[in-house]
Image 1 (tube, rainbow, N blue to C red):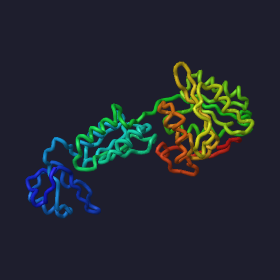
Image 2: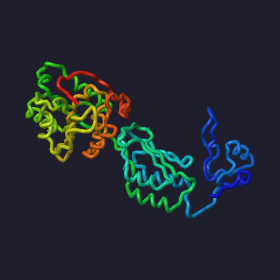
Image 3: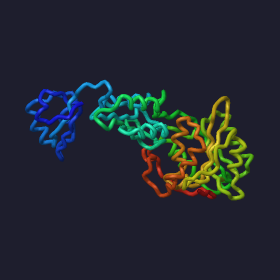
Image 4: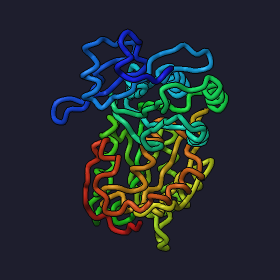
Length: 352
């Protein structure tokens, strides 16, 4: 690549796109990479503020920006993503299906830290719709050393940096606890909220049980749903520290492993996540605090998409939710993409 004055460029091959911006009219490449400069192009280039341009000279130690961008695409894209053609040295990835976006943050930071490279993504664990942009990447200079791109390959390893995990079809069971609901003293207004959130993913409540506050009764209902082949069990009610709230103990008794009881998210701190093993299947059991019933955004909305991809969510991920974990009063979380509905109501004894 060689820099020359535009007046000397006639007959030379342009080695990068040149964008022309006319307010309210256009913002696009006026001349494309590979264009052979003509005499009539000189006034146009000058009007674009170009006194000098870069023309291509072969150099075996360098890669063009588009070639560098293709390497970045190769190292980041997985089978759930479509890639755009290189444009002005940039490639974008879009979702081929609904799902949850994952990125290896450590490897991505290491690659961006090399300099002369920019890879930007949507937030980690973001729930996306088909066709949504996921990431963009480019080599910042017009050419880059081949040696640096080899460093990128080494840091990236043999697994794509990004993944779009599709949602699974799941059978969902719900256990509603609370003697006041079990005996019909108050209406169950929690279950319709759960049904609305599941509907956003094309799911429904396949089995529903009511239980009083006796721990053994709640445990028996959970285990019955597990035996019926549910892929997820949601428990509502009795999740606080009140003496009569025994749902956490029932979940612990039915589960094979408890990930956490309590998360740094408000509302939703008294959330419980556990897993049960049934016939070789790992089934999540969730204890949902009362805030899920009346708050538009809670811990449930943050973890549900990931669980619906079949992910085993580690406790360290839940611990890290403290940064950004105050979602009280928010109406426009990324969750709005899933068309979650706000349903308000009262269901007796429930706390955040």
